[in-house]
Image (cartoon, rainbow, N blue to C red; front, top):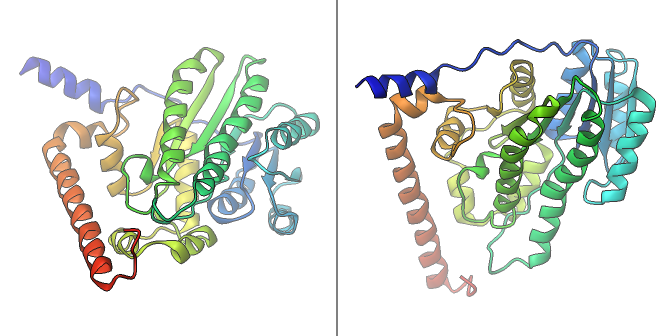
Length: 317
């Protein structure tokens, strides 16, 4: 009993962390011209930051978001950049450093998803998704971390993963691996970069009403659509607010909704016990929820497979 109480205490009591102010910070954000990244850019500009550099592919979208935030931040730099290209990222980061100095915060927000059945999709889709979602995060993090490591105060690197980094759902064979990779990458760097005072945060956005989500729905298989319809929909500004709050608190795990927190807790490994109360006090319940979710997902996939086979409209399945 005493051992259980001790484990409970260690699990639910977080070490004291001083809240961090964003005032005067230099920030770089990739994918900051649309979706969650755009709302993050708009909200961060209202935090009295010193500068913000926004990286994205489309210059017209960059110009638009820069114009929107110019009234709240005088130092705005936009750079058209392809995060899947290592040299493009290096040049963009170095340009920002030359203009504003070493960033205090990097937010890796660029990403994409193209759902579809594994047997029907070309592997090129998975390769490109990995290039953008994982390697884009890798390239920016690697360059910025080298700059941050040269100074005593270090910095803060935020990586955008997904709820789907904690569970796999039909139709996301090209997407889940990239977000699982980001999660593993963050868990390693949390420890490895700590001596340099570089803090890591890992964000798990749920389904969010963005242009990217609307594009996803165009290629989602029917069973994928049915499963996704069971989860709640978040708005990008709400997700952005949770991310900013997590950055200020110095949280490693930043999850938006309860459903995601449950699955982060189930797949936590040895990373910080961000949701210790959920894990320790309600573990039998969340284990049961995980079991029920698996059975439900499997039954939906099986149902759609049988229906497609009967209609002979989907011979690859």
